[in-house]
Every structure is written in structure tokens, then in C-alpha cells.
Image (cartoon, rainbow over all chains, first blue to last red; front, side, top):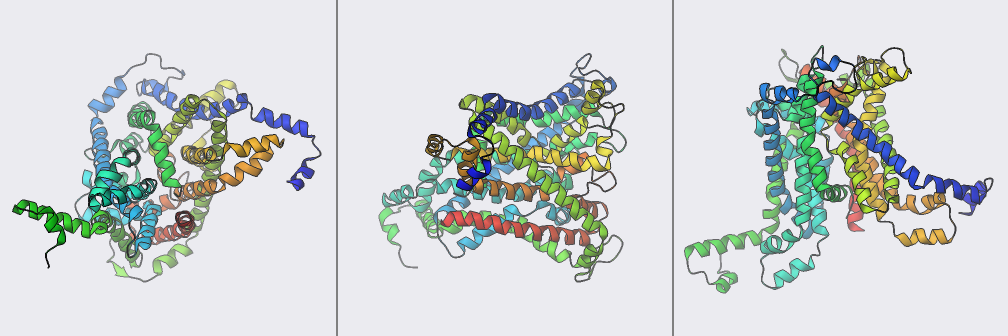
Length: 292
Length: 316
């Protein structure tokens, strides 16, 4: 501390105090946040404006669409069958979420409560499989899916998604279960509960918010996923919306209005999920990043 | 098998009840296996098997039209001899560290600002909107930014700069060899910022208020308080956020693929794009696997640090 004081002595204490007072003032704080918020809102709003044009009207250089229309949405979703991609996304995300929760909840509980041979090694294995770079696996996945006849199918994507999110969710759920005192399980055991009942009737209800957070995160993550869906699918029958948007990007030109409409449709559910479940997402993300 | 003592307690009288208690007995005797088994079997089947397959394949020559044969480490030798590999390595480092600095730097600034807002509702409103950037599909985010940075006068940035008279003619942002990497890196950092913000805000909120009160009484300036209290408390959070954001930017695919596909030329080609091109376009599975193994080894080396930290926390 004293060294630092000497180094700063050239500028008077009052000046420094005043300077940091300005930096910390509400004006500066709100300015920083407003700039950050603008970088999110402006692109989204611009995309929304673009989606209200037709593909030809995009070449009209006004900032606002001259006659805003929803016809591009109709064209993309109904005439070009992109509703299928939205439906696929829903099926993929829902199935992945259910499968991951069913597998990860008991596993996370087991890691939080029991000591057994190789428990640390297995847990480290789960951590590593979570940190493993999925890009490294696209080639074997493509080959295995092609061998299994699962290319261009929803199960092909769902299997890949389970691999992507299961280890992370085991880890997050373990952390949630760790925060529930194990005394509760033990007293339930004393009262005559079996071990499985202690899990199902005591720990599971208490971990409800944690399980919900994991479900919401898994849903969002699988809705966002791009890489494996791109590898596994090549047609709209099985393509999720996160990949289908890329179909409007051609080799020569891009259909900007159609792309914008598809992007807005792909973004809307994620925005709604954040609006309604922000607290769950925050608790899940922090439990997934930090140690307990 | 002897008569279980449990059976006497429950006195099963029908065969259904007896079967049920037998099953329940089995579940409780093997509780860890029952809880953990299904998840581990699934991970082994859909993760461990492809990994083994990948490592094995990196030792084979698999080129379309040529019979598959074992060639030992030749794929690795070819990989390390290609000058393109080292160029892509450099791109990957620039991209991942650029994204790391941007996401953690801006995430820290925003988290500090959020922490100054005392009204919970306003704080939530800000962080909700900022989290949109994280929640949106990366490919969609990248396409939205691609539209904004479009190189003709259609692009929003070009329009605004033209209208303001800053530039005379449209700038081809993403087709420019120097600007393309900058733009994809900023986009990636922008999309990873909210995660850093959330974790760092959690870190800031865990700092006990009395530390700040004491510093205030001692007459410390805000900067001194930041250096003496905030930063030391925040260090473990910063370390974890940095590790995670770097690791995920190092392997990132969607942003570059949808914005530039690795172009112009190969100026934004990173390892993930390289693997995709080798494997899915050239069908050179062996060489693609070798590059994948290289990425995996680097990630694992970093992951060891991460796991060490995590487990250190578990035991401590």
C-alpha cells in the first residue's frame, strides 16, 4: 500500500478522489451499460426492420422499410416450409432436454453423495468430456452416423446433442446437490427411507430449481447448436432452424430479407426463454463455471 | 442366497410385492451403479467410442479413391510440414486470444457497472438484454453481424458512414484481408461477453460489503479499493472465465463459418474451419483426424489447469 501511495503522490489525493468519483458516477455507469445494450438492441432491431421488407425492397436504401410487410415471413415459413425447421428444433431441443435430465440428475446426485472406487477418476473423466473440443469429433460422428443410417434424421442430431450437454449438466447438477445438506438424506434414512427414496423424495424436490435451471440451459444450448446439426443434416426435413437460416446464404448472393425473417424466428424463442427464466440461467451458468 | 432380513420387515405376501421388494433391494444394494450407470454407459457409447475411433483413424491414410491403409504417424508428419497448418495455428491464436481479451475485458467493465446499480430491477433489466447476445444461436448472431458489415452500400455500417460523409465509397469489410479477422474476433468476443459478465457479477456480489466500508473509512480512492479488495477477490473468477472463454473460442466454428467461411482467401481460416474443410469437403479423414488430435491435446493441457482449480475447490 505504502509503495503505491508514493508512486501516486504526484497527483494530489483530492484530484484522484474526484477523478474516480467521476468514473464511478451514475452517468458513467449508465453510459457503459447503454453502449453495451445498444450493441445488442441495434443489430436485432435492424434485422427486424430488414425482415419486414421483401427481398427486392432490401435494395431500397432507406433506413426504414417503405411499406412494411409480413409477406417475407409467410413466404419463408409457409411457402418454403421453414416451419418444419422450427418444428425440428422444438423436437430436438425437447427430446435432448428430457434425455439429459433423466440421465444427469441421478448421476449428479451420485457424484455429490457417494464415495466409491474410482469416483474421482470418473468425475475427472466427466469434466474432461465436457471440456473436450466437439470440433474434433465431427469426422468420426459423420462416419458413425452415416454407417448407422442416421444422417438426415432427428435421432442423429439428438444423439450428438446428448453427448454435447450431458457431461456439463452432470457437473452442474452435482454442484446443486452439493449445496443441499446431506444430513437431510441421512435423517430420512434413519426414518426408514431406502437410499433411492432418500434421493427421490428428499434430495430431488429440494434440487428442483437446479434441475429446472439445467433443463432451461439444455434447451437453450440445443436450440443454439450449429456444428453437429450442420454435419448430420442436409435437408429441411431434419434440419433445425439454427442451421436452416444458413440456406439463404448462396454462393453468389444472399437473400437478406428471407434470411432476416428466418433469423428473427430462430432468435425469438431464445429471447423469450431469457426474459422468463433469467434467474435460472444465471444460477445454472454460475454453478457450471465455479467450484462449489 | 440367504433370507434377507428386509423381507421379514415388509412381510411380502403376494408375488408382485415380493418382486417389488426384491427389485428395491437390488436398487439399494447397487445404488451408485443404478444412479450413475445409465449416464456413464451413454457417455461411453456416444463420446468415448468416437474419440477412440478418431485417434485410430489419425494413423490411417483415408483418401477418396485410395484404399485405406495404416501409415503410422505420417498424417502427423504431413500436418506439421504444411506451412498452411502453422498459418492456421496463428489465426486460431489471434482469434481465441482476441476474443478472450474482448469478452473478459468488456464483461468485467459491464459487471463492475452493473454492480454499481443498486436498484435490483434496473440491474436485471440491463443484464437480461445483454444476455440476449449470449442466448441467440451463434450462427444467427454471426449472420446478423454479417448483414450489418455487408460490403456494399446495403450494409448498415457502410450506410451510416456514407451518410455521415466519413467514407466516400462502401468499404468491403469482410472481404478485406486485414479487417475480416478483426470483425469475426469482435463478433465472437461480443457473443461471449455475457457469460463473463454473469460469472464476474456473481464474483463481485460475493465480496463482503464491510471490506468496502472499511476501505472507505480509511479514505482509499476507488482505484485503490479496486486493486486492494475487488481484484484479489475476483481473481479466481477471472481465471475460470478466462479459461472457459479461451477454450471455447479456440475451437469456435459457427461465427467464422457463417461470416466468412475462412476467407477472404484463408485469412480467417482457424483450426475448426481447417478440420471441416479437410474432413467434410476433401474427405481426407486421416489428416483431419490428426489436426483434431492436435487441438484435443492443446485443449487437454489447458483443461488440466481448469480441473485442478475445480478439484482444488472441492477438497478445500
